[in-house]
Every structure is written in C-alpha cells, then in structure tokens.
Image (cartoon, rainbow, N blue to C red; front, side, top):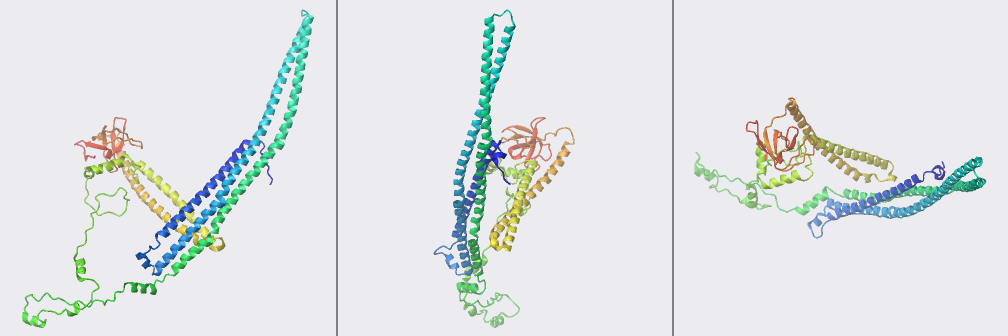
Length: 569
C-alpha cells in the first residue's frame, strides 16, 4: 500500500513539523535508555569485581591455610569465575556504547540538520505563496475601488448632462472625468487578472510540485529514522546475546567447582591431619571417698584396714595425660553464668505488632510512665526533635487515627502494586526459561536463575512488609471502631461535651490534618476528652472551635472532681 505525504497531507505542514520533532525526541529518549543501561552494567560489573576481590584470600593470612579444603578451593574457583562473569557485563556496556549510543548520537545531529533544511524549504515556499496571495488581494481591492469611483463619476456625468442649467464646459469636464475613471478601472482590472493568473499558476506549482517534493523528503527522513531505531533495538538484543556463551561457561565453571568438593573421606582426613593431637583419651576417674571420717557402728580400725589405712591409691589416674589443664577446666565449671540483661521497660518506637513479646512487667499507669519519661532533660529534647521535625515514624503513629488508617492503607496498596509487578516479572522470566529449555540455541536457561532468585527474595520481603502494615491497619481500624462507638455515645446528646479540665500548650501546633485544631505556644484551652491511649487529646477553644491536639504538646490540669483525672506533660 503506497502512501505519499505530499498528496495525502498537503495541508498538514504544522502537524508534520510536530510529528517529526516528536520522532527526534523519541530517538533521544531511547539513546538515554541505552546509556543508563550501560551505566548500570558498568556499576554492576564493578560491584561484582569488588565482591570477588573482597573474598579473595589475603596473603600471609590464616585464610591461605583454609584453601587446602576442597570446599574452600571450590569457593576460590567460583570467585574467579564470578570475576570473569563481571567482565562480560563490561563487554555489554562497551558494545552498547560503541554500536548504539555513539551511532545514535551522531545520527540525531544529522537528523536535526536534515529536518531543519526540509522545513526551511517548506516555510520559504509557504511564504512565497502567501505573498502572492497578498498581491492578488491587493489588486482585487484596488480594482474594486476603481470600479466604484468610475461608477460614481459616470453617475455624476449623467446627472450634469441632464441638467439644462449646467454650462457646456462643466458637462465636458464631467465627461472627461468619467472617461478617466473608466480607464483607471480598466487598468486595475487588467492588473487584477494578471495577478490572478500568476497566483493560480504559482498555487498549482506549490501544491502539486513544491510541497509534495518537500513532504516526500520528510517522509523518507522519517522512515529512515524508524528503520534506524529498529536496527538499534536489534543490535541491543545481539549485544546481550553474544555474551551468553561466555556467561554460560562461567556458570559451568561454578558448577564444576561445586562438583569438585569431596565431602567424605578426603575432607575428613584433612581435618584429622590438621587437628589430631596424638594424646590417648583419659582413663576412668577413681572414687575419692570422704566418708571415712564419719562415725559408724563398724569399727573405724577395721574399716580403715580394709581400705588400706584410708589412703586410696591414685597412681593410675595420675599417669593419664589430659589434653587440657585441670585447673583451667575447674575454673570454667565453677564460674557463674552472667545474668541476662533486663528487658526494656517500654517497647521501641519501631516495634511491630504481634512481634516477639518481651517478658511481662508489672503494668504502671500511663501518666506515671510519661512523667518518668519527661523527667529526663535528654529525653525531653529527643521528644521535641521527634514531634517538631521529620516525616513521622514508619507506622504513622503521629497522625490521628483516621489519617493513620488512610496512610497505612495507601502504603498497603503501594506494596501490593509492587508485589504484583514482581510476580508478573517472575512469571515472565519463568516462561523465558521454559523457552530456553525447549530451544537451547536461543539462550541458557541457567542464566535466568539468579534473577529469579533475586525476585523471589524481593517477593518475600514485600509480602512480609505487607503483612506488617495489615496488622497495623487492623489494629487501627479496631481502635477506630471503639472510638466511633464512644463518639456515638458522646453525641447522642445534643448538648456539647462538658469540660473536664484545662491545658496549656507547651509547643505550637499546626492542625493541618482532619479533626485536629491548631494552637499557639502558651495558649490555654479547655479539655473535653482525655487521651484514650492513642496520643491525642480533645480540646475546645470556644463554642465553635474544637478538635484534637497531641498529648505530648500540652500540659493537662484535670478538675479534681473529674473521674480518672491524670496529668500529661
């Protein structure tokens, strides 16, 4: 199917200009993508080489002695193969730079110059036809004006000629004036017809020769651009495919290194040769009877005689060789074990719900623990830094309950999206591996395994993080329900809540979240609902202004008659 822009798009000069500009931007974006991929390959190869170098045995160190074992030698072979594997990623980066990045960068410059030339010719042709049209319009207006003047002159002459009171000289003068105007109108008509003929000829040349020729060059330029992008994408795949045989050899080398490990006889003999002491195992320990001095019904002399005067012989035990010093063994057995450190009195800020629980401690009122916490000047400064700066803890505990639930739900949604992407990527790699298994000439199936393992670890991390936030979300939702029940009970009565005390703000607070109220430092407010354990206290400024403020930002003075009055600092 043939398609010519010059005939099909003769009136779309501006749109073609925008389209070709977008095409150049696309080539630049693809070039940037390949450049970033090359940088990633170089960075990855550098990290792999550093990792291999890090675990290479140090000279004149104990690690050199360890490489007499087959497992250590296999690990060293794996490190060497890993170093060669990193080299192949450097080859990928080098080929991407040479065959794609440099070529496309040079081609983009040529493409911009060619496009500029074509559209310059198009604008010049467009300007020429517009100037010709302006000349035609000007001649037409002049012809119209001269015709109207000639008509008025003719009417004036006819009027004077019919008037018997006008002299013959005036009539002759009017006649000559009318003839002059008619001649001017005739000249304007001839000029207009000339310009009209010229414009039609130039217009025909413009739309049937010049514009099609220019647009055809632009079409060929655009088709060449698309072809160049396709060739670059094909080269991109070939650059990666060329290193697969060497990468496969590196992986085969790692497999052979693992197969060279001998876990049975050779390794066992090496351990024996390394650590065998040559001592005989100790013999039986003879009994040392301390009951000889006790008073018994049996005569002491006969008992002592039967035991050889109470001096048992220990010559056999003394002749034994011990592989360690006896006094050192006894000191180790007699030393008491260190007691475990005491559990923390309060959970850490980042503790995860339903995580490992610390040993149970006697519960103390919340006010006692807060007062104890605030008595330390250092802890007070830490609290100010937490409440005044930063984006808040990870569990969003600095927000009101409803805002905290929304934030947690948003995080859960984001994690689920990332998890779905990882699952899709894993499925795609699994299908790719199956294709490689069925068609070995297309690629090595083992080359996909490292990426699959990495994706599996990422999926496990995301699932763990999702469950963590779901637990937090459930606990927040449960707390919200209990709070909403309290709110329903509170608002059953149309009268406002009574004040249960007053409070003084210790720090300024900007109530930007839903349900909160702002306050200035040192401001006095009325307390209408105490902290229910979520870190927020409900206060009122006047009849129309009330909301929640952080409990740690205020000092509360409850009425002595109020039930359960506590003081928070």
